[in-house]
Image 1: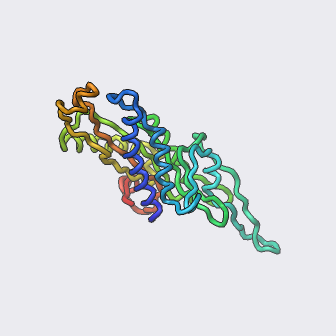
Image 2: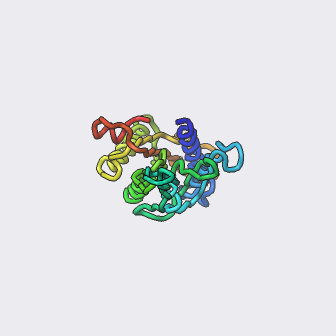
Image 3: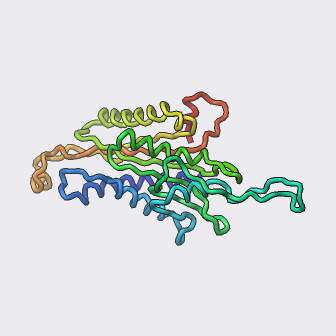
Length: 260
């Protein structure tokens, strides 16, 4: 699906920009500020670049109420066969919500005949989120795919979780690869051990956003700001795409981590 790949590409771009901003807007250049709000805004603006006019093809909503989004995930109407003059009874959409109501960081809709149709929900986490916060967001994203009303089941194409991790003192490829593997294993373990998550298609993508190079201790920038030469970070990005599992016959591992 082209629209999915386009959005994921823009999200990765926004993650790189948020990492740069985390340093740029810090009062102390030796310290890294939390980047969650920077990442949320950058992600929404990056997706907006895909629009060719206002709200077309994507309507982008920050802090969208879950009840509004969840209710729109199932079809608006459905014709139920009946023995009457029309030959059917109209089924009208009823409202839905999820177990963890609140606000979605970013909700993206498309428009069909004047009706907003959910395309994806995006949950955002800044640097080094806790296990509890990660699982809460992944479970929220997963709930949308199990929604049902009298008009039918959820038609949501996909949902996305994005998060950042940072490491200091990463000066070689071996350490970089070790960090990426560590983060990937962590998320895959969360998913495989959670029945609310492992029954869906969950693609875990972990990658380097930026890796610092050992600064020259005699460089003017280092001397000017009184740094020690070890302030660079290895920034790691995580993108988890959630979908309905369309593979009928597969092993549990294939179900959880099937490729797009």
